[in-house]
Amino acid sequence: MKQIKQISNNRILAITIGLVYFWFGALKYFPGSSPAEELAKNTIDTLTFSLIPSNIAIILLAIWETALGALLMLNYFKRPVIIATLIHMTLTFTPLLLFPEESFGDAPFSLTLLGQYIIKNLIIIAALLSLYKTDKTH
Image 1 (cartoon, rainbow, N blue to C red):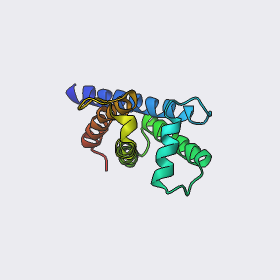
Image 2 (cartoon, rainbow, N blue to C red; image 1 turned 90 degrees about the vertical axis):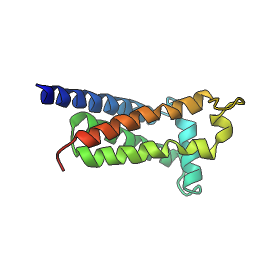
Image 3 (cartoon, rainbow, N blue to C red; image 1 turned 60 degrees about the vertical axis):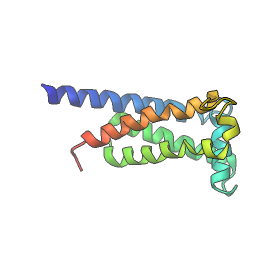
Image 4 (cartoon, rainbow, N blue to C red; image 1 turned 180 degrees about the vertical axis):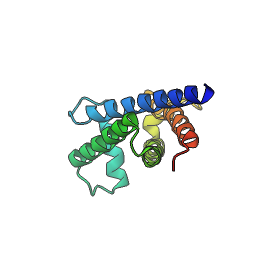
């Protein structure tokens, strides 16, 4: 019974993370719909030394996020998808280093709304690590 409960809790966790990924990614297909659009464009532009035009970069990001979301929800390629999602989650922290003036407030340890948006990804990372650890299929 405990194993069945663990499996269903893991599926719920994967589905909810997948839903968030799919939703946030889908918004990026429609210019101006995602509150993270400009941040994503600026971050990708900086990380790629402006080699990828921002209108292409945002579509590539949308494809990546919606694909990861769909695969998580459908439980396909579980371990590789979790790894790809962890890589993406790690990259979401780069604006803290690239744009600290947009991420941190004046007081010590004070975060702007953007900084809070990024830091909450720690929860998603912890959940993904939990899914990865409990997945016994290799």
